Image (cartoon, rainbow, N blue to C red; front, side, top):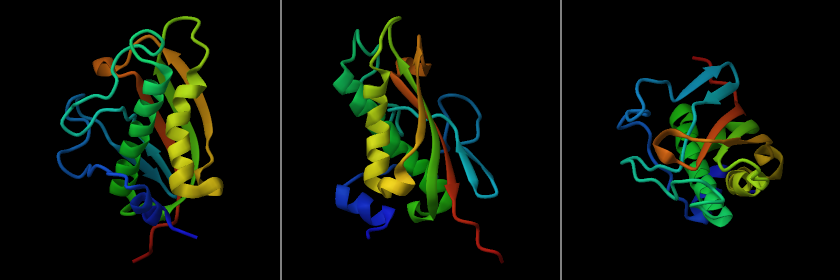
Amino acid sequence: MATPEQRVRELGLEIPDYADPPYGRRYGRMKPFHRIGDLLELSGLTPENRVGDRLNPGVVGVDVTIEEGYAAARLTAVHTLGIIRYALGSLDNVKSLSRGLCFVVCPPGFEDLHLVSNGATDLFLEVFGEEAGSIGRASIGATALSRNNCFELWLSLECHPEPTP
């Protein structure tokens, strides 16, 4: 069975390097992640690349189609892989994803939040496989996100123990 790092190569994913410049420079000082034992909590990520270009900004169901929202969520998941790699050194150090909180900018009454959020969780299944990549998820409609992004993801995961010195 292929490892997550091997799957990333097979899928041709370009994962950003979050070591430089520092994470969060457009949004003020914040931690990109926090590790508590074998639990890794990530700060929110968006479909915005390292230089600030955004994929499909706006409101899903108004300015952004569900398909474009899905693509934005998928790109956000790719960015999340970059933070995981930054925190753990390798995606192979992920034991299992546990929880994802997905924010989708949408108008009142929009009911297809899950179709947008699937963009992120489908990618996680492709990279980590059915067992480690399946995730508990909530999709929440939001009226706005920073810099007019249409999607944001907060992720928690279990990682393999750090080696003892």
